[in-house]
Image (cartoon, rainbow, N blue to C red; front, top):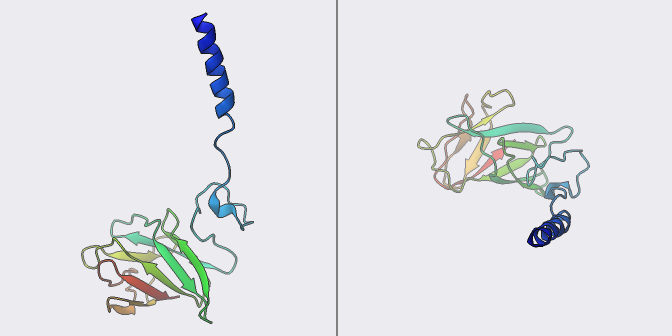
Length: 155
């Protein structure tokens, strides 16, 4: 009798729990681009005529989850996202994108780099950081910033 009760309870638990889970990722709301694996959850999904670059550290590790927002040439906010798990961020040419580097140690202790999709540094991108550093990204894509800085790139 005890076996039957345990079997019945187990069967009921399976039926009750089978309705839980699943569902789409939050990024699916409003997007019709066909991505459905959750990779871009919270990140800007690249579209036509956009440029995609990558934020990485000195060991070439991707920096996913870094908050950033972009404004278009008119000054209107055009994006408010985080970098994708592979450090990817996308923008339209002419946008100005600002990255919140809270938790990063600044140069030279914690150098960061902007790279293209094949790992080459993107040089000559103008930038300005709240801590006073500004200029152009170097040939390897790195830039100067202070710990916990907020840096704007003129893309």
